[in-house]
Length: 127
Image (cartoon, rainbow, N blue to C red; front, side, top):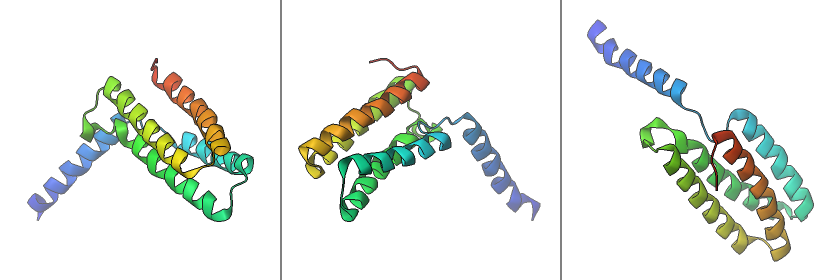
């Protein structure tokens, strides 16, 4: 029985070590800020309820992918993480451009640029 438990405990140790080294792009504190930011955007854009849901879904989809870029399982260097983050941001903005009115798209881009600036500063990235 002890031999069967060994692989499980080794895997748990590996996952624990991986979790200690992992610094997500968006921390839990950042995610709280993003929720507040989302609420402010919805107010600025005066979106209908179904539009709010769609906006939140798109935003969550891309920020979730961004958060995971630093996972050790991907093996991305810091430069690769930045490149992937920028690619995801471009895709997010393209999807938002298709979805939002020109006025609301402008609000989104200006506001998300502020979030990008904070991520860049936190990670030590430059343009």
